[in-house]
Amino acid sequence: MDAHDTPQTRQKLISEALSAIKKTIFLPSASRECIYDEFDPLLLINEYLESNLSAVLNKILDANSAMSDSDFVALLKSEATQIVGSIIQEIEDGFIDGLNDVLPFLKANISALMQAAAPPAQAGIVQMMGVPQVMRFVEVANEDFKKNPPKK
Image (tube, rainbow, N blue to C red; front, side, top):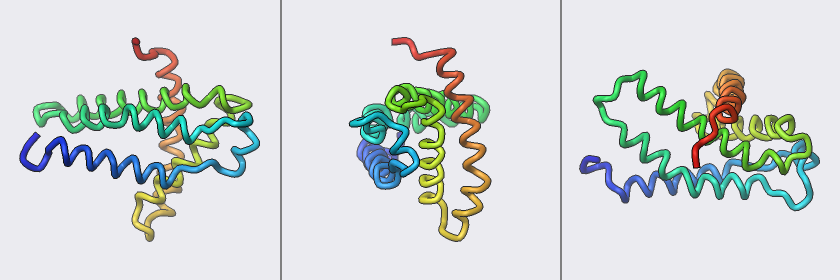
């Protein structure tokens, strides 16, 4: 940490990230008929992120400049895999057809997050090019997570 990177600035970053995610993610109408009554995947996702996002962002921000690019990419991939796998594990049982229903729900939300993050003039191209790539990562990350679940 340096003079600009303080626990307060990190907490502000995390709070703003959580707030933006909560404002953007939604339950698509197509997913409403794919979940069991009284199940709320958004509540579970928000609870997971509130509990874990701080540690993940701190781990990424604490990566030092001596770390090679490939080690940093490996760290990002590992942390993203944990997030994706954990969220899917948390919500999968609430969807009637499990992962087959979870993936379209996640795709709609990833698309919404990418559109919200992109400049308006570029949102369409970001969505068109980015969503398929991210969804491929989601599927692979979930498979990797299931093969190597976190040790408790």
